[in-house]
Length: 266
Ligand SMILES: Nc1nc2c(ncn2[C@@H]2O[C@H](COP(=O)(O)OP(=O)(O)OP(=O)(O)O)[C@@H](O)[C@H]2O)c(=O)[nH]1
Ligand SMILES: [Mg+2]
Image (tube, rainbow, N blue to C red; front, side, top):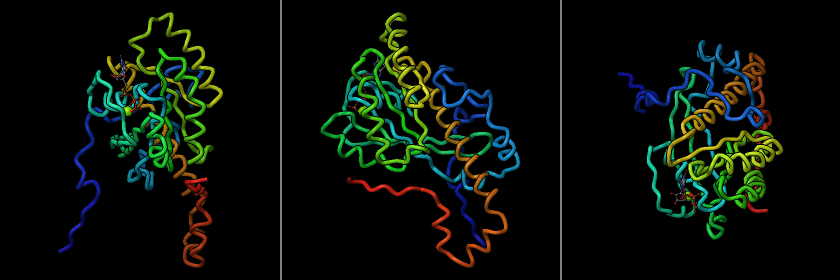
C-alpha cells in the first residue's frame, strides 16, 4: 500500500482572513517599494497555471528591529493574535511567530522574528538577523529619537544580509497617541528617510489596529511577488541545459546559487 504525506495534508487550511487575492496598496506613494496597482502579470499567470515552483513550500524570514519599547512586540501580537497589552514587557533576545497566507491561490508563509530593542539583549538578537528576506525597522511616531536611530538599525541588519536583495519597511507605531499636526510633522522626516533608505513607509497603531493588517498583507504580497519572479527567472534560465549540468558536474549546483554567505562575527 502506498502512503503519501504531503505538506498540504499535514497543515490545517490557511485562515480565511489570510487569503490575498489582490495586491494591497502602499501607504504613501512617495515611499513605496513599488506603485503598481496589482501583482505583476507574469506572477498572476504563473499562479493561475501553477508554475510557482518551490515558492509555496518556502518560508520567508522577516526580522523586526528598532529601539526598545517602540512597539515591535505589540505590532506582531496585534496581527498574529489580535491582542494588545498596554503593559510593557521587554523582549529578551528574540521571539518568533509563523503566519501562513494564501496569495493568488498559492500557500505562502512568513516567519516573523521579534527582536529585543534593549541594548543589553541586542547582541543575542543580532545573531538571528541572518537570512532575512524582509527587514522591518520600527520607530515610535511620538519619539523623534527613535527615528534618529533607524539608520543604525538598518546598518546592523544589513551587516548580516545581502543588502541588494532585502526588502525594507520603515514603520511608525503608536499613531493613536499623536495629534494630526504632530503626526504630519514627523511624517515629513520619516518619508525623507524612507526614500533615502529605499524603504516602504507605513504608520500604524497596534492599540486601535489601524493599518496593521494592511501593512502585513503588503509585506506578504511583496515578498511573495519577489519570490515568484525569482523562481520564474530561475526556471527560465534552467530548461534542458540544467539537467545536463546537474548530471555532469555537481559542483555547478553551488556556483549557480548567488546567495552570499556572510560571517557572523567580524
Ligand atoms: N498607545 C499605544 N501604545 C503602544 C502601541 N504599541 C505599543 N504600545 C505600548 O508601548 C510599550 C512597548 O511596547 P512593546 O511592543 O513591548 O515594545 P518593543 O518594541 O517590543 O520593546 P522591546 O521588546 O524592549 O524592544 C507597551 O507598553 C505597549 O503597550 C500603540 O500602537 N499605541
Ligand atoms: Mg518586544
